[in-house]
Length: 105
Image 1 (tube, rainbow, N blue to C red):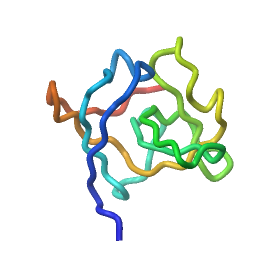
Image 2: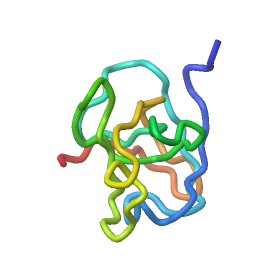
Image 3: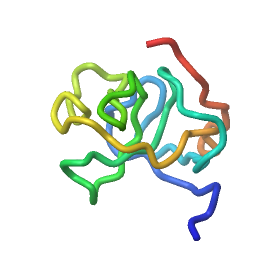
């Protein structure tokens, strides 16, 4: 059975300025439902082996349309389509501890 809280490491610039390469995050599987604006860990249906950290934009086709906060990087639903959410990001614990919350999209 998967753990309800797990850690992930951000790689790449797609979530800048909210998150940076090297940030360590705690993610919760389950809990309250995902809302548009939440930062989530997801996998694209077209690339199930790839886990990404993105912002949920809208529910679509039983999954979520997700985008990075950095509009110059397009490794999100614009390139790969609908994603399935694995969990919701709760907090960045390294190197600058901070709660990662909802942001209207």
